[in-house]
Length: 246
Image 1 (cartoon, one colour):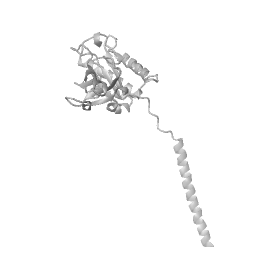
Image 2 (cartoon, helix red, strand yellow):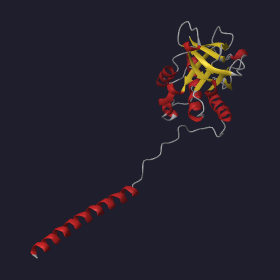
Image 3 (cartoon, helix red, strand yellow):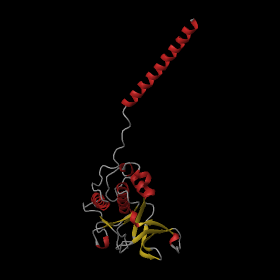
Image 4 (cartoon, rainbow, N blue to C red):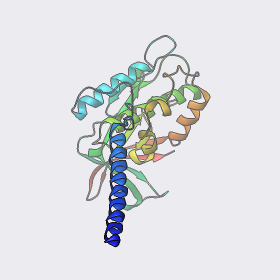
């Protein structure tokens, strides 16, 4: 009989311990439910296109970015247009040579034109030249910054696109649009994971007034200037837009 009471006592203690453990678990669960979760990340940028259709989004991006870059007079540094110097109907791809003497399409990196957009930074002068002031390295840096900002907005908000080609105004001695910058989503993936202000923290600068740290960012993300070769036929493939590193 004494042994039975002792056994019942041990079970009673065990149930009390189990009950306390369950109580602690429930209490912890309630505390976790009441604790606020992590704050959602803020917006990638303070402005975003309002349209839903990709073409309309691109027009909004072009207008937004283009209106922010000015000359000392207050005139636009360059108008932002969608499209290049030639009509690009039925172009299947943008291609970039991977060899010094390419012979076949296998000697090029090939980027689907359906996943690409072409912008032109067009100065107010003939053939898109910038007529105000003098061409300089400092002005070229600001143009590259503008091209970079166009690419970042495009790749962030127009999810159907992976490539952005930007023609820049003719430099001194050039008579037509021949220089381009090319951006691929993979090259800017780390910048797209962080807010725009982390990559470009300042307002668009006047030529020659870009902050040193921001200039380093622009230089690192626009390391190659490409030469526009033209829209050419590729045997058995179709028309291609050809650019090559300078």
